[in-house]
Every structure is written in structure tokens, then in C-alpha cells.
Image (cartoon, rainbow, N blue to C red; front, top):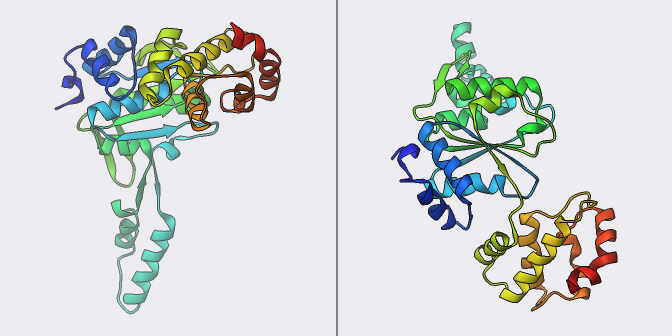
Length: 297
């Protein structure tokens, strides 16, 4: 079954994603369903830790498709996303030819052609997604790449094919399911946004975050889960924090407290385990100074 036929409706998307532990609201489930039906990439923006990457993982699990991840970074170029040649193996191949055919006349052009055979090709994420389709291609943190790479990616998403000069054009038999994420460290170009369906993922409210914790870490006592979620929600309300904890940190903190044997969140336990959720020194000092007040609310 093709990905576009995998879900009957957006509510079916929400229910089946929920089966993997990912709780999507109606708006997000609708965007995912439409992206599959229309064959369009989905662009997710939001603060770090809000579940953008986790959504791609959940979609891949739900569709039972391989997840191919392209992690973007400053300076990434098309070759690092598409393919490279296995130079050491090519050299070994030449040495082997020299060893077994030292006295035989060889056609130089034929030897050169052998060096660019498919067996020496190292497929990077974008090429793998096209060749191994159907698959889920996660382009993570696209905002960290530069304009040139963004333009290259737009071309691939528009044609679902790439050309390898030595081998020819590779076209996806079934376009991959594409999820792009951005932490919005810079604005993406309108051309890329127009190619995608867009959704902003915000931090969940108290009730939804509590449901996420209970789903993902059911071993954590209910009272402890409520305290952790409540405290994280109050930390996010502090606009002076450099980096408020995301949902990922909430889950980690709940797991850590459970491992510590805590049945409730008290001042001492919260203080010693704060580094699980708060990752900047300035934030940690600010939170520790007000923990007593935060826990009493």
C-alpha cells in the first residue's frame, strides 16, 4: 500500500500515531494526513524539544517504513546529502587489476568506467530515500544549512530525482514521505515553504503534556508525573530562561526521578536532578533560587 492510502482520515492518523506513543492534536494530524494524500513534504517549525523529530519517527513506525535522516549543519553541501565515491575501494580495485593483469593489455576507458560502478557508490540520505522508496526522509534542522543547500533540496523535492553524472538519473518510483524540521534560527525561503505544508508545533498545555508523560513513561507514579509536568509548565512561563525545557526534557526528568526512587518531587530531589531538564548554568542558578516557591504553587 502506498503511503497516501495508509490512513483513512486525519482521526485515523491521530489514533495510529497514538499507538506509537506520539499524541498529535487535530491540527497536526490533519497536516500529516494531507501531506500524504497530496504527496507534499511537511515543514515543522517550533522550539527545540517540542516533538518535531519524534513525529517523523512516529510516522515511519506507523507506516512501517525505514526512517532515513539527514542531519543538517552549517556548511553541509549537496554531495554530503546525495552521494560520494568510495575512494579507498577504487584504489584497491586498481591494485587488483594491476596484480592479475600486469601483462595483459587493458582498455583504459573500460577501467575508468569500472571505477564508477554502482558498487563503489556511497549513497547519502537523499539518494537513499529516492532509491529505497517508499521511505520516510527526515531533513532535520534545515534552518542550520545555507541558502545554496536549501535551493538544492527544493529542486529534489520538486522532481523527486537526482542525476549522477557517472551513472545517470535516479528517480523515486514512489516519492518518499518527507518531514523537514526547523528551530527557526533563520527564516527559510518562501520557495521552500510554498513546496511544503506548514505547521508550527508549540509546547503542549498541561493536560496534553501530562498525557504524553503517562503514555511514554507509564512506570512513573501519577502524582510524580503531575508534579514534574506542573513544574516544567511553570518554568516555561519564565521568559527570562535562556532555554526552557521541552517535552523531551520533561520525559527525561520523569524517568530520572523514577530511577532515583522518588515518589514525589521535593526540594532536594528537584535540585539535585535539575540538570536533566535545565541545560544552561544561568538557568539552573535562577531555577534553584526559586525552587521552593515553584514547588509550593
